[in-house]
Image 1 (cartoon, helix red, strand yellow):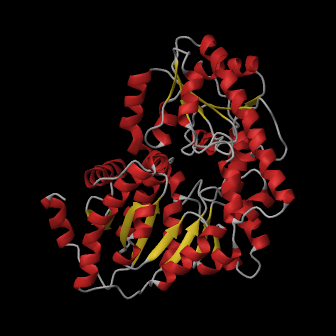
Image 2: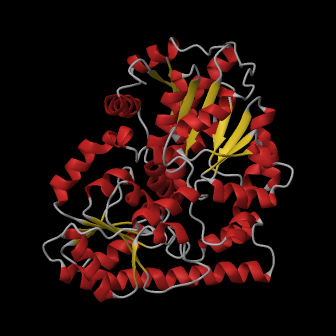
Image 3: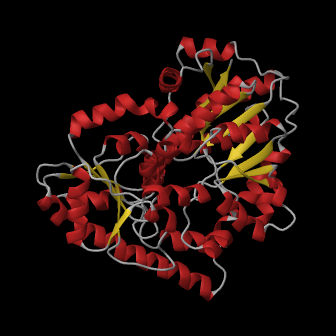
Length: 465
């Protein structure tokens, strides 16, 4: 570790008075900037924050300050994890990264919402009233824990914060010109670990109970298989129709990116790209093509042209919200016409009707930002938690800088596929990047200039005033 980092840690003693938030990041491209914004706003309110890679934070939790751990899910698999966090002196809150766009309410509640996990949490931050009402129907007696706040991810789409990505968007336009962006969301079929992985994983977790639920997931996988092949078949005629434009396909973080590269290999103006947050890609693109993907709504809120392509349809497995804010087409000729209209600057989105529908699902379209609403809820919690101290705790914290990198190296050697998947979702986070991104956030917002960042453990950083 460089001397600068060691000095930074040395001056960051754990404060017994300031409440702490622990913000783990699983998928960096999707979550990092939103968690950084939430962290910066929290520091302004007097909190101190640990932000870092989820697995590293979990493995080092005993070495970190005790605080409110904000998880990304309350699925069945989280119950024991939350209980362990609480035994170690922390409290737990959560939201669900998949809670804005789900294809079937009953399946979502069954697979993603565990009452046992919710019981361990102080509160749950809902994307909006639709999710809150759906969950309240299952969580009888725990409705008070459900608060419709929105999610900090969508704060980044607001004019006050989207400038964070302005330079990156400009660089993408400089690199690719007037490009067409395709976002895919077919991991239940095209998963990194193979077509049957998610079904097998649900069996192992015990979240599939009975033949009916298994048939539901199999049909969902097969439907997305048809969708995958429909999108793959779309690429060649789209490339031929717009030879002067670069076409960028950006897969979901959990998808098999190599498979998509194979689909694009013979198409000169089509390429697969997956780097950074999706927001600058949406800002830079002339038009987005998707199907049932949250990025459809994100592009709509960024005032970008959005097309939802439906080579196959399903009343069960199609997602309502991202499709209703888009121009919906089911065949190649109308798709090409819609792209041509978007490139010509003609409005093609859902307009006022789409925004009204978005407001039903998302609580922070206007008014206070979602991160501020989340912190309003946190402010009401008792986070006066006793902090670990003494030389043993400091030694444990320093040991993380050695033991976890060694463990990661062993995994790279012994389980390379697991390491590759982990690297695809979280390719690392250094102190320089943390400080650089915080400086960019400060420049975009005109705030947060007095926040300090220092390493607390491997891939985990402390933020404080």
